[in-house]
Length: 105
Ligand SMILES: [Zn+2]
Image (cartoon, rainbow, N blue to C red):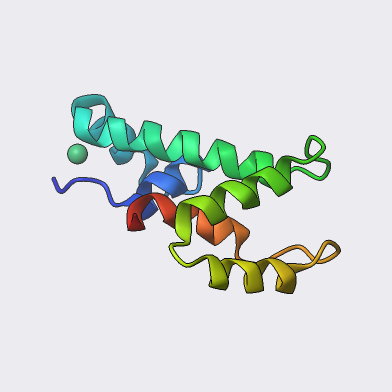
């Protein structure tokens, strides 16, 4: 059997996988996919924290600061991004950045 795709793992995490029995069996026998499942699990838990209606004060701001420090090589672009996002609006890219960031860098 092929290794599990990230999509299958995510679906399994949410209990939405069609063949969850197979996935569970594969996870039980495959340490590689189990490690990936654990990674996805902790990533999704972080995302759930970000999504929580009332995050701890400053949490989102800190997340943004971390992301900016992590992602941007060019301070100029960072500054314009900061101004654009403002204080009221929630930046729509946050979750995608958190979810995809680990793989891209
Ligand atoms: Zn596997």
